[in-house]
Length: 199
Image (cartoon, rainbow, N blue to C red):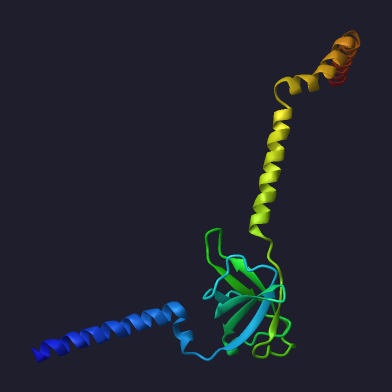
């Protein structure tokens, strides 16, 4: 009976340890234990960015978003980053996404090598990413405009557009026939002249 209880407790403890490691990996992986420094960035909008999303320096994962809050009319993003990344004072952050249904992340560029490293809790400069919703709305408006334009060139409207051109051809039919006849005669003459020169 005692051995059975100890076995069950051992299995339970092992399951708890495995679950804890899985949880740590989901929260931040090895970076959960690693030393990090906090930095901040302020944006006009955070889009779908959320706590736990990655922070990348030139595409390399260097940290995580800790929290997002409103501060002084801006969206302030607090990030924990690896101090070894040495983010510069003139580096800039932008919120990006990996695809239409992909994960959002904060992308940071290198900045210049001559600039000092960013101090802990400093505010990073930012760039605003074009709003995907606004872009889609503009594309939809453009598509509607093209559709309305195509409708204007169909049916009665298309006939109204071609009406004046048809009348112009009818009124000048003799003149057009004369011009075409002259062009035909000129072509025949040039061909006969070319034939004599070759002979």
